[in-house]
Amino acid sequence: MIKDMKSYYSQSIHSASHLLRRGCIWIWSSLAERKWREIFFTLLKRDHLNNNGFILPYTLLLLMLISLLGLSARDLFITKYQYLTNMKSMYEKNVSVSHAILLEMESGEVASRQLRGDYGEIGIQSEIMNPEEIKLEVTFKRNGKVFLPTTVVYNKGTKHIIRWE
Image 1 (cartoon, rainbow, N blue to C red):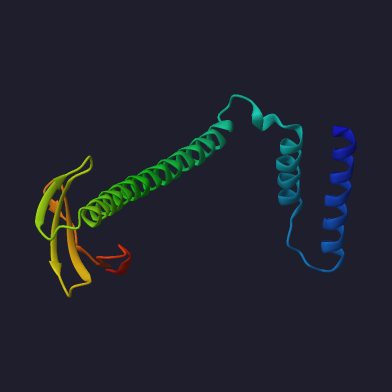
Image 2 (image 1 turned 180 degrees about the vertical axis):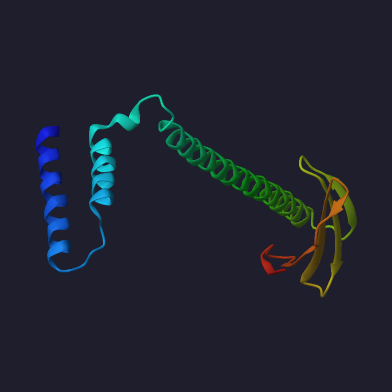
């Protein structure tokens, strides 16, 4: 197969140089043509894949591509892990606040309390807005950080939430 390839490419190089010479375009000299043939046939023989150092650039390129892929995968993993950690803490806060509001609605007392839950401390302040509505202000504290308070207004008789801010 290599002989067929050699003859095919030899003919195509010869015909290309013949066309260039015929068209009065003197770009290639016979020495340059001979040099191009040597380079081309050397690549066809695949002698460049021996242990003389030609394989090293490809190995380095492959190593750089694998390293780049590894670094980008690491960054994606870290970003995803940070997002999941943040969402977990937000769900824990929401669960704690919702649980505290439900406990306060069941008791029906108007008072200020501090509750300690599994995920942090919860401060509840309640006040009567009118005879039917009670306003609860719930603050969540974890690791010394105080989150924005949640305000809930609910109907005392039906225990339905009117407003949640």
